Image (cartoon, each protein chain N blue to C red):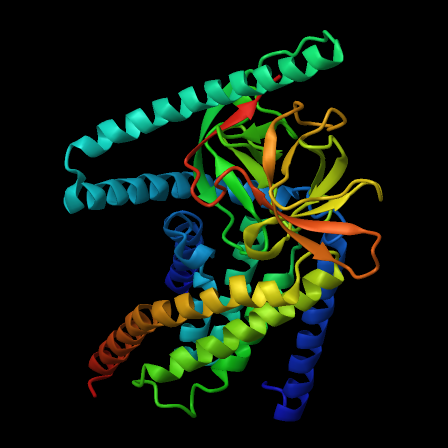
Length: 171
Length: 275
Protein backbone atom coordinates (compact mmCIF):
# COMPACT_ATOMS: atom_id res chain seq x y z
CA UNK A 1 0.00 0.00 0.00
CA UNK A 2 2.83 2.37 0.97
CA UNK A 3 4.67 1.45 -2.24
CA UNK A 4 1.56 2.27 -4.26
CA UNK A 5 1.29 5.77 -2.75
CA UNK A 6 5.00 6.32 -3.29
CA UNK A 7 4.70 5.39 -6.98
CA UNK A 8 1.58 7.53 -7.37
CA UNK A 9 3.14 10.61 -5.73
CA UNK A 10 6.53 10.17 -7.40
CA UNK A 11 5.13 9.63 -10.91
CA UNK A 12 2.78 12.61 -10.71
CA UNK A 13 5.38 14.96 -9.17
CA UNK A 14 7.89 13.94 -11.83
CA UNK A 15 5.37 14.47 -14.62
CA UNK A 16 4.53 17.99 -13.37
CA UNK A 17 8.23 18.87 -13.19
CA UNK A 18 8.73 17.44 -16.68
CA UNK A 19 5.76 19.47 -17.86
CA UNK A 20 7.18 22.72 -16.47
CA UNK A 21 10.79 22.21 -17.58
CA UNK A 22 11.39 19.83 -20.51
CA UNK A 23 8.09 20.29 -22.35
CA UNK A 24 7.99 24.03 -21.61
CA UNK A 25 11.48 24.35 -23.08
CA UNK A 26 10.44 22.28 -26.10
CA UNK A 27 7.54 24.73 -26.58
CA UNK A 28 6.00 22.57 -29.32
CA UNK A 29 3.17 24.41 -31.15
CA UNK A 30 3.36 27.09 -28.42
CA UNK A 31 1.65 25.09 -25.64
CA UNK A 32 2.66 22.88 -22.74
CA UNK A 33 1.07 19.40 -22.79
CA UNK A 34 -1.01 18.28 -19.83
CA UNK A 35 1.01 15.16 -19.03
CA UNK A 36 -1.01 14.58 -15.85
CA UNK A 37 -4.21 14.29 -17.91
CA UNK A 38 -2.57 11.77 -20.28
CA UNK A 39 -1.33 9.71 -17.31
CA UNK A 40 -4.71 9.84 -15.52
CA UNK A 41 -6.63 8.77 -18.65
CA UNK A 42 -4.19 5.94 -19.46
CA UNK A 43 -4.13 4.75 -15.86
CA UNK A 44 -7.92 4.87 -15.49
CA UNK A 45 -8.38 2.84 -18.66
CA UNK A 46 -6.10 0.10 -17.31
CA UNK A 47 -7.01 0.09 -13.61
CA UNK A 48 -10.66 1.17 -13.49
CA UNK A 49 -12.72 4.06 -12.05
CA UNK A 50 -11.63 3.97 -8.38
CA UNK A 51 -7.88 3.95 -9.06
CA UNK A 52 -8.45 6.35 -11.98
CA UNK A 53 -10.24 8.88 -9.83
CA UNK A 54 -7.58 8.57 -7.09
CA UNK A 55 -4.80 9.34 -9.59
CA UNK A 56 -6.96 12.18 -10.95
CA UNK A 57 -7.46 13.59 -7.46
CA UNK A 58 -3.75 13.55 -6.55
CA UNK A 59 -2.62 14.71 -10.02
CA UNK A 60 -5.19 17.51 -10.04
CA UNK A 61 -4.17 18.64 -6.56
CA UNK A 62 -0.48 18.75 -7.53
CA UNK A 63 -1.27 20.60 -10.75
CA UNK A 64 -3.42 23.16 -8.92
CA UNK A 65 -0.72 23.76 -6.32
CA UNK A 66 2.00 24.07 -8.95
CA UNK A 67 0.05 26.37 -11.27
CA UNK A 68 -1.31 28.84 -8.70
CA UNK A 69 -4.53 30.69 -9.35
CA UNK A 70 -7.77 28.90 -8.63
CA UNK A 71 -7.46 25.87 -6.37
CA UNK A 72 -9.82 22.98 -7.12
CA UNK A 73 -10.40 23.24 -10.85
CA UNK A 74 -7.91 20.53 -11.80
CA UNK A 75 -8.88 18.37 -8.81
CA UNK A 76 -12.50 18.49 -9.91
CA UNK A 77 -11.85 17.81 -13.59
CA UNK A 78 -9.11 15.20 -13.29
CA UNK A 79 -11.04 13.22 -10.63
CA UNK A 80 -14.21 13.23 -12.74
CA UNK A 81 -12.29 12.29 -15.90
CA UNK A 82 -10.35 9.54 -14.06
CA UNK A 83 -13.66 8.10 -12.86
CA UNK A 84 -15.45 8.50 -16.21
CA UNK A 85 -12.66 7.01 -18.33
CA UNK A 86 -12.21 4.24 -15.75
CA UNK A 87 -15.77 3.06 -16.46
CA UNK A 88 -14.53 1.90 -19.90
CA UNK A 89 -11.97 -0.43 -18.29
CA UNK A 90 -14.04 -3.59 -18.67
CA UNK A 91 -15.63 -2.74 -22.00
CA UNK A 92 -12.68 -1.92 -24.27
CA UNK A 93 -9.82 -3.92 -25.76
CA UNK A 94 -6.78 -2.73 -23.81
CA UNK A 95 -4.07 -3.83 -26.27
CA UNK A 96 -5.33 -1.52 -29.01
CA UNK A 97 -3.41 1.79 -28.79
CA UNK A 98 -6.17 3.55 -30.71
CA UNK A 99 -8.54 3.25 -27.72
CA UNK A 100 -6.50 5.41 -25.26
CA UNK A 101 -5.63 7.83 -28.07
CA UNK A 102 -9.31 8.43 -28.89
CA UNK A 103 -10.24 8.67 -25.20
CA UNK A 104 -7.44 11.18 -24.57
CA UNK A 105 -8.89 13.35 -27.36
CA UNK A 106 -12.32 13.30 -25.68
CA UNK A 107 -10.80 13.87 -22.23
CA UNK A 108 -8.74 16.83 -23.50
CA UNK A 109 -11.77 18.40 -25.16
CA UNK A 110 -13.86 17.95 -22.00
CA UNK A 111 -11.06 19.20 -19.73
CA UNK A 112 -10.34 22.31 -21.79
CA UNK A 113 -13.98 23.21 -22.50
CA UNK A 114 -15.11 22.90 -18.87
CA UNK A 115 -11.94 24.74 -17.68
CA UNK A 116 -12.72 27.51 -20.16
CA UNK A 117 -16.32 27.83 -18.97
CA UNK A 118 -15.37 27.89 -15.28
CA UNK A 119 -12.44 30.28 -15.72
CA UNK A 120 -14.26 32.76 -17.95
CA UNK A 121 -17.14 32.76 -15.46
CA UNK A 122 -14.57 33.68 -12.81
CA UNK A 123 -13.12 36.60 -14.77
CA UNK A 124 -10.46 35.07 -17.03
CA UNK A 125 -10.01 36.98 -20.27
CA UNK A 126 -9.67 34.79 -23.34
CA UNK A 127 -11.75 34.49 -26.52
CA UNK A 128 -13.14 30.98 -27.16
CA UNK A 129 -12.23 30.92 -30.87
CA UNK A 130 -8.60 31.84 -30.33
CA UNK A 131 -8.42 29.46 -27.37
CA UNK A 132 -9.53 26.56 -29.59
CA UNK A 133 -7.15 27.45 -32.43
CA UNK A 134 -4.05 28.38 -30.45
CA UNK A 135 -4.35 26.10 -27.43
CA UNK A 136 -6.80 23.21 -27.77
CA UNK A 137 -5.84 21.96 -31.25
CA UNK A 138 -2.06 21.99 -30.53
CA UNK A 139 -2.81 20.30 -27.18
CA UNK A 140 -4.81 17.54 -28.89
CA UNK A 141 -1.92 16.81 -31.26
CA UNK A 142 0.61 16.71 -28.42
CA UNK A 143 -1.61 14.54 -26.22
CA UNK A 144 -2.22 12.04 -29.04
CA UNK A 145 1.53 11.67 -29.55
CA UNK A 146 2.27 11.43 -25.81
CA UNK A 147 -0.46 8.86 -25.11
CA UNK A 148 1.31 6.14 -27.09
CA UNK A 149 4.51 5.90 -24.95
CA UNK A 150 2.69 6.68 -21.66
CA UNK A 151 -0.02 4.05 -22.23
CA UNK A 152 2.52 1.51 -23.51
CA UNK A 153 4.64 1.92 -20.33
CA UNK A 154 1.60 1.62 -18.04
CA UNK A 155 0.36 -1.44 -19.97
CA UNK A 156 3.80 -3.09 -19.61
CA UNK A 157 3.67 -2.35 -15.87
CA UNK A 158 0.22 -3.92 -15.60
CA UNK A 159 1.33 -7.06 -17.48
CA UNK A 160 4.42 -7.40 -15.24
CA UNK A 161 2.23 -7.02 -12.16
CA UNK A 162 -0.19 -9.67 -13.42
CA UNK A 163 2.66 -12.07 -14.24
CA UNK A 164 4.27 -11.68 -10.81
CA UNK A 165 0.85 -12.19 -9.17
CA UNK A 166 0.26 -15.36 -11.19
CA UNK A 167 3.75 -16.66 -10.28
CA UNK A 168 3.10 -16.07 -6.60
CA UNK A 169 -0.24 -17.82 -6.83
CA UNK A 170 1.36 -20.69 -8.79
CA UNK A 171 -1.04 -20.34 -11.72
CA UNK B 1 -20.32 -6.65 9.11
CA UNK B 2 -20.63 -5.23 5.59
CA UNK B 3 -23.59 -2.97 4.96
CA UNK B 4 -26.04 -3.99 2.18
CA UNK B 5 -25.18 -2.77 -1.37
CA UNK B 6 -28.06 -0.27 -1.54
CA UNK B 7 -26.90 1.43 1.65
CA UNK B 8 -23.26 1.44 0.53
CA UNK B 9 -24.34 2.99 -2.76
CA UNK B 10 -26.16 5.75 -0.86
CA UNK B 11 -23.06 6.45 1.27
CA UNK B 12 -20.88 6.48 -1.85
CA UNK B 13 -23.09 9.04 -3.59
CA UNK B 14 -23.25 11.15 -0.43
CA UNK B 15 -19.44 11.18 -0.26
CA UNK B 16 -19.25 12.13 -3.96
CA UNK B 17 -21.77 14.97 -3.54
CA UNK B 18 -19.94 16.27 -0.44
CA UNK B 19 -16.60 16.07 -2.27
CA UNK B 20 -17.89 18.10 -5.22
CA UNK B 21 -19.58 20.66 -2.94
CA UNK B 22 -16.34 21.05 -0.99
CA UNK B 23 -14.36 21.51 -4.19
CA UNK B 24 -16.81 24.02 -5.60
CA UNK B 25 -16.56 26.01 -2.38
CA UNK B 26 -12.77 25.90 -2.55
CA UNK B 27 -12.89 26.94 -6.19
CA UNK B 28 -15.00 30.03 -5.48
CA UNK B 29 -13.00 30.94 -2.39
CA UNK B 30 -9.65 30.84 -4.20
CA UNK B 31 -11.04 32.56 -7.31
CA UNK B 32 -11.26 35.88 -5.46
CA UNK B 33 -7.53 36.55 -5.15
CA UNK B 34 -6.01 34.59 -8.00
CA UNK B 35 -2.76 36.56 -7.94
CA UNK B 36 -2.10 35.80 -4.27
CA UNK B 37 -0.23 32.65 -3.29
CA UNK B 38 -1.60 30.39 -0.54
CA UNK B 39 0.70 28.76 2.03
CA UNK B 40 0.03 25.34 0.48
CA UNK B 41 1.06 26.62 -2.96
CA UNK B 42 4.14 28.30 -1.48
CA UNK B 43 5.25 25.06 0.25
CA UNK B 44 4.50 22.90 -2.79
CA UNK B 45 6.49 25.18 -5.11
CA UNK B 46 9.35 25.13 -2.60
CA UNK B 47 9.24 21.31 -2.74
CA UNK B 48 9.11 21.28 -6.55
CA UNK B 49 11.95 23.78 -7.03
CA UNK B 50 14.94 21.40 -6.53
CA UNK B 51 13.37 18.79 -8.84
CA UNK B 52 12.62 21.45 -11.45
CA UNK B 53 16.15 22.84 -11.12
CA UNK B 54 17.64 19.36 -11.59
CA UNK B 55 15.36 18.67 -14.56
CA UNK B 56 16.16 22.05 -16.03
CA UNK B 57 19.87 21.19 -15.85
CA UNK B 58 19.14 17.82 -17.44
CA UNK B 59 17.03 19.49 -20.14
CA UNK B 60 19.72 22.10 -20.79
CA UNK B 61 22.34 19.38 -20.91
CA UNK B 62 20.41 17.19 -23.35
CA UNK B 63 19.53 20.26 -25.41
CA UNK B 64 23.16 21.29 -25.61
CA UNK B 65 24.30 17.74 -26.33
CA UNK B 66 21.77 17.45 -29.11
CA UNK B 67 22.95 20.71 -30.61
CA UNK B 68 26.56 19.65 -30.28
CA UNK B 69 25.87 16.36 -32.02
CA UNK B 70 23.91 17.99 -34.79
CA UNK B 71 26.72 20.14 -36.04
CA UNK B 72 27.69 22.93 -33.66
CA UNK B 73 30.29 20.74 -31.87
CA UNK B 74 32.42 22.52 -29.27
CA UNK B 75 31.55 25.96 -30.60
CA UNK B 76 28.09 25.71 -29.05
CA UNK B 77 29.10 26.54 -25.46
CA UNK B 78 31.24 29.40 -26.59
CA UNK B 79 28.30 30.53 -28.67
CA UNK B 80 25.98 30.37 -25.63
CA UNK B 81 28.38 32.54 -23.62
CA UNK B 82 28.69 34.98 -26.48
CA UNK B 83 24.90 35.09 -26.86
CA UNK B 84 24.57 35.97 -23.19
CA UNK B 85 27.18 38.68 -23.62
CA UNK B 86 25.40 39.97 -26.74
CA UNK B 87 22.13 39.94 -24.83
CA UNK B 88 23.71 42.07 -22.08
CA UNK B 89 25.25 44.44 -24.62
CA UNK B 90 21.93 44.73 -26.47
CA UNK B 91 20.34 45.56 -23.13
CA UNK B 92 22.86 48.37 -22.64
CA UNK B 93 22.33 49.62 -26.22
CA UNK B 94 18.57 49.45 -25.74
CA UNK B 95 18.89 51.52 -22.56
CA UNK B 96 21.14 54.01 -24.32
CA UNK B 97 18.66 54.26 -27.20
CA UNK B 98 15.83 54.80 -24.76
CA UNK B 99 17.90 57.44 -23.01
CA UNK B 100 18.65 59.06 -26.37
CA UNK B 101 14.99 59.09 -27.39
CA UNK B 102 14.04 60.44 -23.99
CA UNK B 103 16.74 63.10 -24.23
CA UNK B 104 15.54 64.13 -27.69
CA UNK B 105 11.96 64.42 -26.52
CA UNK B 106 12.94 66.38 -23.45
CA UNK B 107 15.19 68.64 -25.52
CA UNK B 108 12.23 69.41 -27.77
CA UNK B 109 9.96 70.31 -24.90
CA UNK B 110 12.74 72.12 -23.02
CA UNK B 111 12.08 69.93 -20.04
CA UNK B 112 15.35 69.03 -18.33
CA UNK B 113 14.24 66.36 -15.91
CA UNK B 114 16.79 63.59 -15.49
CA UNK B 115 16.25 59.88 -15.95
CA UNK B 116 17.92 57.39 -13.69
CA UNK B 117 19.68 54.39 -15.25
CA UNK B 118 18.24 50.97 -14.49
CA UNK B 119 19.80 48.69 -11.94
CA UNK B 120 19.47 45.20 -13.41
CA UNK B 121 19.79 41.76 -11.86
CA UNK B 122 20.39 38.97 -14.40
CA UNK B 123 18.29 35.85 -13.71
CA UNK B 124 17.77 32.51 -15.44
CA UNK B 125 14.40 30.86 -16.12
CA UNK B 126 14.17 27.50 -14.33
CA UNK B 127 10.61 26.42 -15.11
CA UNK B 128 7.38 27.54 -16.66
CA UNK B 129 3.83 27.18 -15.39
CA UNK B 130 2.62 23.63 -16.16
CA UNK B 131 -0.84 24.98 -17.04
CA UNK B 132 -1.69 26.71 -20.31
CA UNK B 133 -4.08 28.98 -18.39
CA UNK B 134 -1.40 30.79 -16.47
CA UNK B 135 1.62 32.50 -18.05
CA UNK B 136 4.22 32.52 -15.30
CA UNK B 137 7.86 31.49 -15.10
CA UNK B 138 10.08 30.50 -12.18
CA UNK B 139 13.45 32.29 -11.98
CA UNK B 140 16.57 31.21 -10.09
CA UNK B 141 16.82 34.17 -7.70
CA UNK B 142 14.59 35.14 -4.81
CA UNK B 143 14.40 37.12 -1.59
CA UNK B 144 18.00 36.30 -0.67
CA UNK B 145 19.16 38.27 -3.72
CA UNK B 146 17.06 41.29 -2.84
CA UNK B 147 14.15 40.54 -5.15
CA UNK B 148 10.78 41.89 -4.06
CA UNK B 149 7.18 41.41 -5.14
CA UNK B 150 6.10 43.53 -8.14
CA UNK B 151 9.64 44.33 -9.31
CA UNK B 152 9.59 44.80 -13.11
CA UNK B 153 11.12 42.11 -15.31
CA UNK B 154 12.52 42.93 -18.77
CA UNK B 155 14.75 41.64 -21.57
CA UNK B 156 16.84 43.49 -24.09
CA UNK B 157 13.78 43.43 -26.39
CA UNK B 158 11.22 44.82 -23.95
CA UNK B 159 9.00 44.32 -20.92
CA UNK B 160 8.36 40.73 -19.74
CA UNK B 161 6.16 41.19 -16.67
CA UNK B 162 6.59 41.60 -12.93
CA UNK B 163 7.48 39.46 -9.93
CA UNK B 164 4.37 37.82 -8.54
CA UNK B 165 5.71 35.72 -5.65
CA UNK B 166 9.08 35.66 -3.93
CA UNK B 167 10.59 32.58 -2.29
CA UNK B 168 14.02 32.62 -0.62
CA UNK B 169 15.85 31.06 -3.59
CA UNK B 170 13.43 31.52 -6.45
CA UNK B 171 10.64 33.80 -7.63
CA UNK B 172 7.59 33.56 -9.85
CA UNK B 173 7.22 36.10 -12.64
CA UNK B 174 3.81 36.85 -14.11
CA UNK B 175 4.12 37.56 -17.84
CA UNK B 176 2.24 40.31 -19.68
CA UNK B 177 0.17 37.66 -21.46
CA UNK B 178 -1.26 35.97 -18.33
CA UNK B 179 -5.05 36.16 -18.72
CA UNK B 180 -5.88 36.49 -15.02
CA UNK B 181 -8.01 39.38 -13.87
CA UNK B 182 -5.76 41.99 -12.27
CA UNK B 183 -2.83 41.37 -14.58
CA UNK B 184 -2.82 44.70 -16.35
CA UNK B 185 -0.56 47.72 -16.76
CA UNK B 186 -0.68 51.16 -18.28
CA UNK B 187 1.32 52.26 -21.31
CA UNK B 188 1.58 55.02 -23.87
CA UNK B 189 1.51 55.00 -27.67
CA UNK B 190 4.96 56.17 -28.79
CA UNK B 191 3.49 58.12 -31.76
CA UNK B 192 0.85 60.11 -29.88
CA UNK B 193 1.73 59.61 -26.17
CA UNK B 194 -1.91 58.55 -25.66
CA UNK B 195 -2.53 56.52 -22.52
CA UNK B 196 -3.58 52.87 -22.98
CA UNK B 197 -4.24 49.83 -20.75
CA UNK B 198 -2.65 46.46 -21.47
CA UNK B 199 -4.22 43.15 -20.44
CA UNK B 200 -3.25 39.50 -20.88
CA UNK B 201 -5.29 36.84 -22.64
CA UNK B 202 -5.03 38.10 -26.21
CA UNK B 203 -5.26 35.68 -29.15
CA UNK B 204 -2.19 33.56 -29.96
CA UNK B 205 -0.21 34.43 -26.84
CA UNK B 206 -0.52 38.19 -27.39
CA UNK B 207 -1.95 40.99 -25.22
CA UNK B 208 -5.13 43.04 -25.49
CA UNK B 209 -4.86 46.84 -25.39
CA UNK B 210 -7.66 49.28 -24.64
CA UNK B 211 -7.53 53.02 -25.08
CA UNK B 212 -8.02 55.21 -22.01
CA UNK B 213 -9.96 57.86 -23.88
CA UNK B 214 -12.06 58.21 -27.04
CA UNK B 215 -9.38 60.52 -28.49
CA UNK B 216 -6.70 57.87 -28.18
CA UNK B 217 -6.68 55.92 -31.47
CA UNK B 218 -4.50 52.97 -32.48
CA UNK B 219 -2.73 52.30 -35.76
CA UNK B 220 -1.26 48.98 -36.82
CA UNK B 221 2.48 49.07 -36.10
CA UNK B 222 2.16 51.53 -33.19
CA UNK B 223 4.77 50.93 -30.50
CA UNK B 224 3.57 50.86 -26.90
CA UNK B 225 5.93 52.06 -24.17
CA UNK B 226 5.68 52.01 -20.39
CA UNK B 227 4.05 55.17 -19.11
CA UNK B 228 5.05 57.64 -16.45
CA UNK B 229 1.92 56.74 -14.52
CA UNK B 230 2.90 53.06 -14.29
CA UNK B 231 2.91 51.74 -10.73
CA UNK B 232 5.86 49.38 -11.08
CA UNK B 233 7.62 50.00 -14.39
CA UNK B 234 10.24 52.61 -15.29
CA UNK B 235 8.95 54.85 -18.09
CA UNK B 236 9.68 54.50 -21.82
CA UNK B 237 10.49 50.79 -21.93
CA UNK B 238 9.16 49.06 -25.05
CA UNK B 239 6.19 46.81 -24.25
CA UNK B 240 5.08 45.73 -27.72
CA UNK B 241 3.71 46.57 -31.15
CA UNK B 242 0.07 46.82 -32.27
CA UNK B 243 -0.69 43.87 -34.52
CA UNK B 244 -4.39 44.22 -35.20
CA UNK B 245 -7.22 46.61 -34.34
CA UNK B 246 -10.46 45.06 -33.11
CA UNK B 247 -13.51 46.97 -34.29
CA UNK B 248 -16.49 46.69 -31.93
CA UNK B 249 -18.75 48.28 -34.51
CA UNK B 250 -19.99 51.04 -32.16
CA UNK B 251 -17.33 53.52 -33.32
CA UNK B 252 -16.41 54.38 -29.75
CA UNK B 253 -14.25 51.99 -27.78
CA UNK B 254 -11.07 50.94 -29.52
CA UNK B 255 -9.36 47.70 -28.67
CA UNK B 256 -6.25 46.20 -30.25
CA UNK B 257 -4.05 43.12 -30.17
CA UNK B 258 -0.46 43.80 -29.14
CA UNK B 259 2.49 41.50 -29.80
CA UNK B 260 4.89 41.72 -26.84
CA UNK B 261 8.34 42.97 -27.82
CA UNK B 262 10.04 40.38 -25.57
CA UNK B 263 10.09 36.87 -27.04
CA UNK B 264 8.16 35.37 -24.14
CA UNK B 265 8.26 31.79 -25.41
CA UNK B 266 12.01 31.66 -26.03
CA UNK B 267 13.53 33.43 -23.04
CA UNK B 268 16.41 31.91 -21.07
CA UNK B 269 17.95 34.93 -19.32
CA UNK B 270 15.91 37.89 -18.20
CA UNK B 271 16.53 40.95 -16.02
CA UNK B 272 14.86 42.18 -12.87
CA UNK B 273 14.87 45.95 -12.43
CA UNK B 274 15.80 46.45 -8.81
CA UNK B 275 15.42 50.21 -8.44
